[in-house]
Image (cartoon, rainbow, N blue to C red; front, top):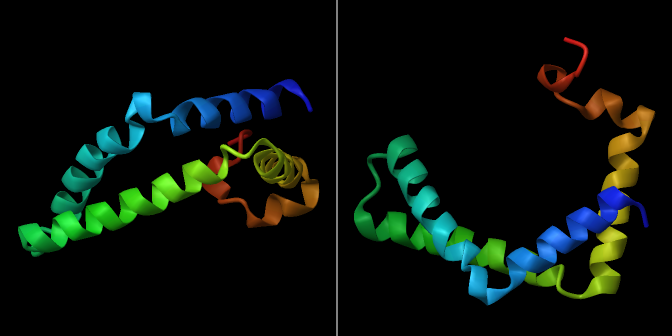
Length: 98
């Protein structure tokens, strides 16, 4: 496990802890973003959508609390992101040489 993988795992583990309340903070941004992008939604629909997104995020973060599972997922992510054959899937706007 290299330094990038270790850093990603440590960050995800820290964010998954309830004392940081990352999900509650992100709900604020989600609500504002949804309200700006979809102003036709009523308040109840907006809140339900934000709760659904926050629940998905919390579920995903909790998956990373198991070290063995998260180590595998992050290792695959790093491997795929450094594979030259995956370059065709990358958005051209993200090319570092442009």
